[in-house]
Length: 235
Length: 235
Figure 1: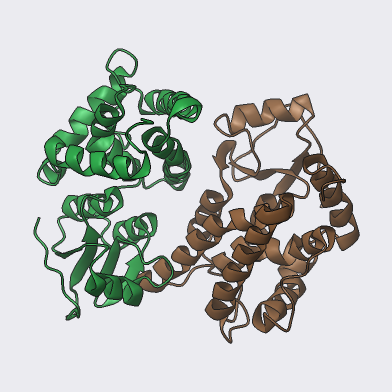
Figure 2: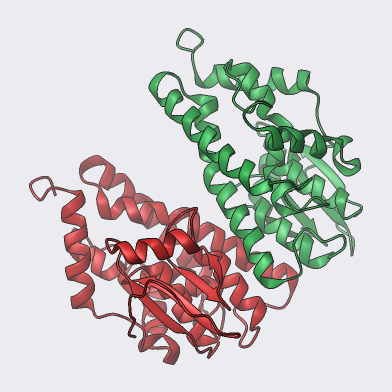
């Protein structure tokens, strides 16, 4: 994956551009979905402290000034969950959601659950002491629910990757790295055998495996990020 | 609207039942959407402290044990935003979302924004002192964005009520009551003339106006609720 920072974007009909910042898991959601749908797109990578990129975000996502933003013929779509629904609706094959409306609602329910519970994982990453103990317990509870939800399926979506897999993909992407930095392993094979296998299945999928940064790169990134939040003498 | 607490629910094909608790704004979202779509449904009203109703929620929404739950031929759908998407997809007329995929994504973006920012309104209701000042400022900022978003349209959806109107309907339902209880008016006609008019338009819509509790009833409910959270000597 390569990208160029630009200050002005040209747009042609039928063209897709994805504004991203490495290694945002929200951006990866869109990359994975577009790869699964076999859609061509131009990846425009920026950095938040680059004023040109900030200008782009101000132009295309003025409410949040965040990535990802998907530009369709120059029209911006923001918020990863919203972009994913757009992708699914516009290019239905291969499907990320079940066809049956009730089953589709169940899939969206779990996406909503995963979104809501992601704050516990964030706390696990950025807190210490009692707060950290509480966050760890919460993460464990969420993983228990997910372990039960995936059951004996290869993916949350069944035989193929679905919307919930993409939504939870950040666990396969970076939670192992985050555990290594924090120094506490929660998602271990003994406690969560099905999720553990799911991480492997997800990472090995042909559309995903070529779009995963290395453990080494992520470790350096998240370690620096955590040290900026938690002074090392308290961690 | 009338409802009966039941411990077991019969289900017939094609039948809709809505589990609700008065006066949950999340439940009203579903009532309004079903009324707009002119769908027949049975409203099953419960109370959270009623063990029979708790059993029903445990059965139909075991993850959250919350209302609303929509039962379609006995199959439960939970989470108001998920239920609304189900309703829109299953009964497309009259539409709550634009047909154009990009415009639909924009509508969903604003729904996501409204969901995220609702926490500021909650803080406005349950905090005092500095926290309250901060929440009031946040509420004002959110209202400014919404005032700009509705522009000169009758509803957020345009000439007709759309998904964002339903999502924000709780502002038309109860924010005035909450302001009265808190003792601070924020959403006033001078500062937010378009939102002020929208509240009137929304409340007067034929599908909405017969499904709005009275100011008096809501005042008593929310006053009691706030007093349970904030001891009166600190408020």
